[in-house]
Length: 314
Picture 1 (cartoon, one colour):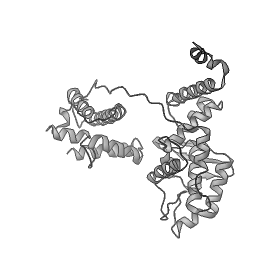
Picture 2 (picture 1 turned 90 degrees about the horizontal axis):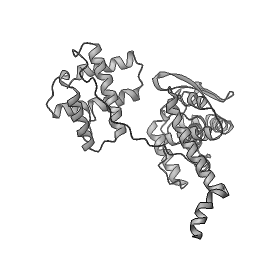
Picture 3 (picture 1 turned 45 degrees about the horizontal axis):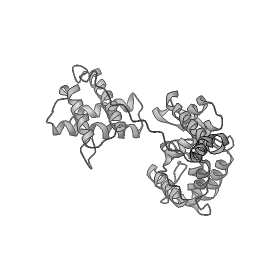
Picture 4 (picture 1 turned 45 degrees about the vertical axis):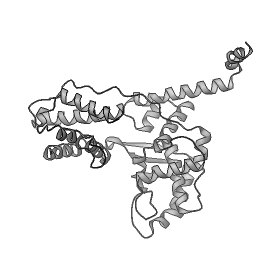
C-alpha cells in the first residue's frame, strides 16, 4: 500500500537530505509500520480504516490516528516523533504534486513529556569503566568502548561506525560523522588513549582472526561491531558492578555532558562536542547540573540541615 509514493520519499531522503540508515529506519517504522507486533504505522492504520488515497488523509484522520495510538499506549514522545515524520512525508508529497495540496495543514503534535536523562555519578562511572577484564581481547575492546563513550560523549551509532583511520592517537582526537552526515572533532584523554592503543596493538587483530575490515571495533566473530552488542554489553557491566539504574549508551553521553558542565565547561563547547545543532538541546544538561549542585549543597552545607533539625526538635 502506497509503496511507490514511499519509495520516492526514501529516494528524496537519501539523495537530498543525506539521511542516515537510522533516520531511514525510523521514517519507515513511523510511516509504513513494523511487520511484527501491533499495527502502529500510518499506512497500517489507513489500511485498517479502508483509506486508499493519500489525498484523503487530513487533520481529522490524523487526530483519529493519534487517538488510536494513545489507546495502544504509545508515549507522547513517540507520538511527537511520528507526527514529525508524517509532516515531512506529506510536505514532500505536496511539493512533488503527488497530492494536490498539503492536506494536513494545522495538524499539531502532542506536547512531549519532559524527562531529564538519567546520569551516573563519578563513582558509578569509575566502577563501570573498571569492570571489563582487560587481559582478554574482548575485555580490552569493551574497555576502549566504555572509555570512549564517556570521554567523548559520542552517540553509540557514531562509535560503532568508526574507522581506524578516523582516530588520531597522538592528538587524542577523532573525526566523527554524526547526524545529517555532519563531521565534527571529538577529544579524549589519556585513559582512553591508553585503552585504545592497547586494544589496537594487542587485541584487534586477534578479534579479526584473518578478516579484513577498516572498522575500529570488531566483534567476537571478526565482523564490525553493532549497536545492539554495545547496548547489551553496557547493561551487562552495569549489572555486574551493582549500578541500579537503567544504563545504556546514551547514559554515558548524558553523564559526559553533565560532568563537563559541572566542571565549568562552556555550554557552547559542550554543544560542539556533542554535535547538537540547537543550543536548546544542550541546555537540558544545565538543569541536571543545577539539580546535582542542589543535592551536593543539601548534603554538605551545615545550614541546609537546620530546618530539618528544628522540625525534629519541635
